[in-house]
Length: 125
Image (cartoon, rainbow, N blue to C red; front, top):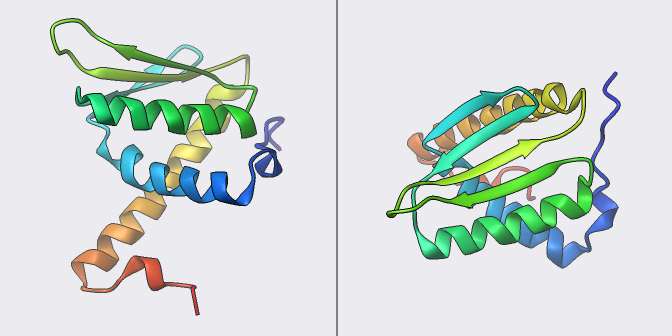
């Protein structure tokens, strides 16, 4: 059993909707994932509005998962954006489990789009 869990009640319903929208839009756009000693790094393309949206997502993520250290880096000379998610012992395992879940959800949505279905309508009867 994992010692870490996110407190979803730390954000209100409107914040949760925004968080979900940002996560679905931003996270699949990562260009690279790097394993770090205490977490993971995610490389994204350099884009001002993308950086702003990623910053908003990180702020909401921090509210419900305060045990994470989230670092956004905007590299010189129009280099990439790096989001690093790190923390104390055990956080890396927690993040690995979350990445599997996010990847499965993304692959499901991608498969539905390729099949011509609307993934937003699933489960919303």
